Image (cartoon, rainbow, N blue to C red; front, side, top):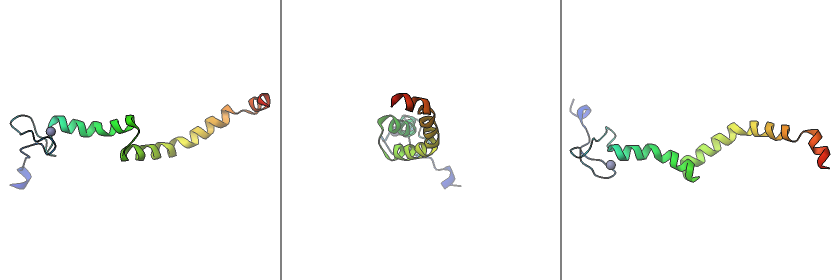
Length: 84
Ligand SMILES: [Zn+2]
């Protein structure tokens, strides 16, 4: 049972000990665990990073048909005629 009951005694990111704060099973304190979870959101806001690129490609593929449909509906024959 020894290994399954093993619990990290300090945060592998900031080094905080289990006595100072709660260290999760993944070896991160509450603050660092939260940071990891927020990192993905930050990448979306910053517009850079591997997660952002993955998200951008995925959403582009998902949105493209809708954008094309929107573009087509905005460029109605009547508007094109009035532009000319
Ligand atoms: Zn930490």
